[in-house]
Amino acid sequence: MPYGLRVLLATLSLGIGTGLVGIACHYLLEGVQGLAFGQDKSDLLQQFQEAGGLRRFLVLCVTGCFATAFWHILQKRYKILSIRQQIDLAGDREPAPLAHLLHAGMQVAIVGAGASVGKEGAPREVGALLAGRLAKGFSLALKERKVLVACGAGAGLAAVYQVPFASSLFVFEILGLAYSWQNLLLVLTSTYLATWVAQSIVGQEAIYHLFAVSWSASSFLQAIVIAFLVTPLALVFAFLAKRASHKRRKDGTVLWALPLAFLALGSLVAFFPIFMGNGQVLAQALLSSQLIPYLPLILAVKGLLVYLLLRNGAYGGTLTPSFALGIGSGYLVTLLLTVLGIHLDPAIGMLLGATVFLGTTLDAPLTAIALSLGFTGQTWSLTIPLVLAAGLSYVIRKRWEKKR
Image (cartoon, rainbow, N blue to C red; front, side):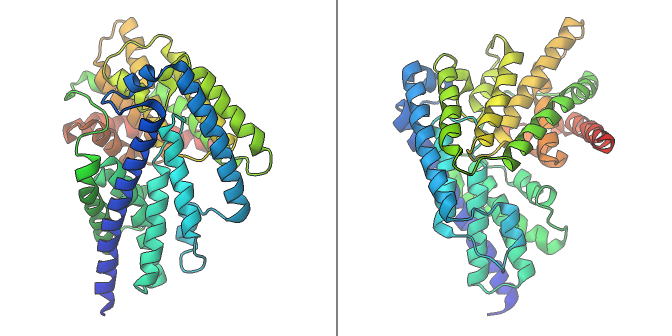
């Protein structure tokens, strides 16, 4: 079989496979949520509220104990490779398939049970794992193997969140794939095919419901102020998240530390269900113009909960928590401007805040813009103020890094 045809078939197989991975993650998440909190409802916050405080507390305590035992046993027997390690070690060291599948499944399960981490790590890791197996099966060269693993991670993200363009940017900006016509073709083919395959089950609607937002000349002022005020907050969260991942407990201390972290989370959500899950509940409440008292304190606690779980042994992503924190931060800055007599649109403020926060924590401003638009179903007409906010935030972050 010609080599080019083998690369094409591997890419098409990857797109279809990661689409199925996205479907599996969707069913697993909904299944855990239904089992833990009752029948699925369109309003996730309502589902959590109707379950009752005691049930939320018990679910998280049980989940914490189960997850602790699972990860402690898994990590004693297997080496879990990150996506970056899978790319770097492609052709040299094969990750253990079953261990990685179980590891990814647990990440999705704890999010379904209400843990304050993101679910996006799981489909990316499984997509990368699948890509490695396909690359080996089609006997691809080392260069194409690495490219395909990166494509798998992007396609997994695209399938779960239905954001193929943003996921394509993720592969180039965050995973560092070199720009070339061949790489661009492979990335777009895998991400868009995975999105299409998963679409019938995951759905075509945007994850967050928000009316169509428009911008005006005043949005430029809003973008500048939000970039200056939100970027430092995002830098603090990014520092904590990175530190938590690097210092994550993997020894015997996880046996008491992680259950205690889940106990703390469960005790909190027993009274305040707004802290449940990966941040989707909090972000949607703000986007729906629901009144949330003590919002600055809630955002600070939400960020600390993410750190607490990751630092004490849990695995999960920070993308959706970052989005929620950015939505809240942008909203607060817009309220501050209103107090000063400058009345601006809270909706565009929240999108600007999400873009700045994501761009800082991901170190990928273009991906952040595409995710903010894709998550909320907005048109590309909002790109101009988002580019201004993301670009200015990028400059602020780079100047801060030089001073360190």
